Length: 473
Image 1 (cartoon, rainbow, N blue to C red):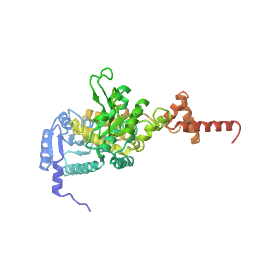
Image 2 (image 1 turned 45 degrees about the vertical axis):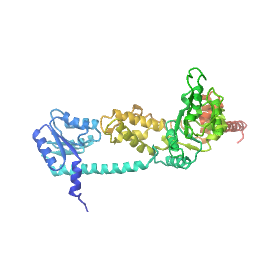
Image 3 (image 1 turned 60 degrees about the vertical axis):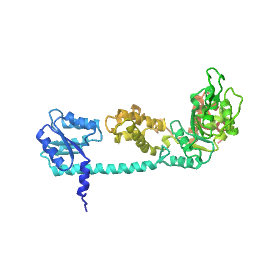
Image 4 (image 1 turned 90 degrees about the horizontal axis):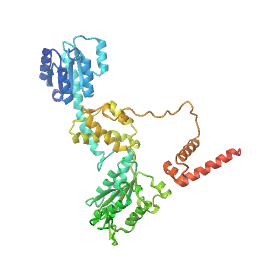
């Protein structure tokens, strides 16, 4: 049994649907515009296709009723240009020379419907009502999605994947305790956002949150930045200044990329953690500080410890509680909500009525590997929001490397043969060792394993090679 929409619901939907009529016959434009306005639609007409395209460009219409044969512009050309301007526009083509072939061609090109003159207004209104109700449903869905979207945010961090929910839950548990935390994960994954969330949920949320990027400063400047300095302590020190540990006393200090610090600086940081003491550069005075230290790294600090580049005692002090933020390729299900988040952010920033991405743009976004993680995704949406000429971001608005992704290596070539997993591992390790010039410490770091594990594997491989040479099975 078919249930008809109540008249008031249809009327409301019609008022939200703006229609532009373009035809070289002014009488047809006037009659159609008048009939649609009488039916409760918002309608306007013109005999100039360029004027109708300008309405599409400005977003003042959602549907265009276009004549197929116009002296200034063919209807098929109009359809193509309108879709280039706004891939979300709906075009209904009208013709006095109907044929099944031309109707199929128009639909294939992207026309919503294909009608013939004189217009069958009941049929036209049925098509328009379907669109009007579709728009009304979209608005309702968008409203529900916005409410759902708010529930997917954790202190400004967006995600609903199991990996991110685990991060959120761990952050909630440890934030209430005034303790040091190590946040690990690839560059651009959102480690600083997690650090800020930990501070905001902590007992010292009202105190200061100080940030220092350890990789951006040489040792002397980093020491001055963190611990402060006395006047005359070094060239250019024209006054006495406190460091970040004093500035954030009672609050939180976030050390980004702590894996880039020198061993000498690590020793000083260890003293802050163990004794809660600092010394300004050039001062013998020891000052007591009470800060929560949150450190972040994109390196494997365990491998750095084995390589002798990171102090073991500092590592264990920091990593008693560790939060690992996954890369975007580990949480691909978060890409749609992140796109929605950034789209809303930059639509407001650039004052543009962005409503979403076209289907082909969505496919390209999802298929990209995102080596730069969330930061790369945000930059892509930000630049696309600037270049988008309509209220939908299309594939052509995205960077070239996302429009045309590099082809992955085929799983099997003509020379491929099945080999045991140990053989694949051995060949890979040999190639990494060769690329590192035989440096086992560097190879272990590149492979992401401990030096001891690498030595053990090489020793086992050597024994197997000797056994094979001696004919031992």
